[in-house]
Length: 528
Image (cartoon, rainbow, N blue to C red):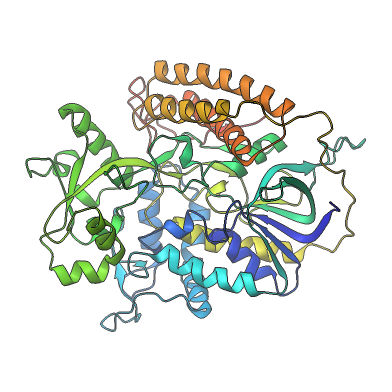
């Protein structure tokens, strides 16, 4: 196939990618690549909402204080201020796009604001309990119908095309020229050239056995950026959401933080509460504290789960505020107006990622990273609830501003993908077996509580998987399953490397061998 040329190539169609695409499309020719359908992303799964200082009782300074407190000393204060101060403007942009946020005329903002763990006031604007879906549907429809945006569904990015990979004589050529992308439907690898390339592929929750993330969250952008030469920071900080629905038929279903924000109580099987024993903020403590408390109680008592009880609230209140959670639980035989919800912690959010500046720029010229793929410095050692979609919005708009400043350049002819020395795979069972093994040992050895010995065991197994996958990748034609597994193993390696370098317990990284906090907070930065 002939080369495809665009002004900007965006890999990933979550809120960060869609925000960027819509802010560029007035003057730029944009290609939006997504692994599955346009709306298949972690953004669409977000229930709670978007945090921003919108009410008179709130302020950017209060939002900053709450974010810094949750981040356990590692948030970049200047970046945090930038995001908090730009939050209200970003929300207003969504409102003008037509996002149907839940109304409340008793609030001076005209919208219902809820409160979540770690927040000192009600500041989370939402669309019932399906905020991500509402945002994605609104922006996705605009992107799909925009004449300057080409959407390539069921296309999986393989690797970035850089000056180094092209073997340019000038060793200082640090530019990204585009990417090789597998068309999963046609079984063909396309060459996509772009003046600017953006990684917006989300996080890496699927590296763990239990996760709230969709199947698309395989660390693709982080792994591609690492292989291309970008620095990676703070990958040890994997946020485990405290409350994922525990049911054999409820794959990855999240019970929103807002349930606790509206009065939900965590209980043991006998009905007694346990969070007050762990933190004075009880159910409204930050996620890392709540997740560790649940993990502690489950292991101490040999429990399969704990229970989140909000049945003391009026039934009409629950049906109005949590219609999606109410309906899904009812499908599974759980009436949340009368019964507690069985919950367990699950991998939820990747706080680390590709090191970027305020404008989304990475270490490579013309390469950007935004959203969960990036490490901006906002989240520190633990992300504050509902700051993730806010980050997507603010940095999506910031990257657009920078890209629009770039001078126009002629398209560069790039070499086509070479399949002349590979064959079709003979045994694809290797991929599924390695995928299962990786996710299980990452859960067992690199989970909520870690030790040196567990990390060493994980590192040993990752090394073996690396060797197998490298051989497989070299000899056989690429498939979407192989590409995702390759990226998961690279991402798992980055998580373990980072965890082994942090000799303390801070935020989301808790080590039995290093239970204390070091006096100075430092980022863990990996370089090739």
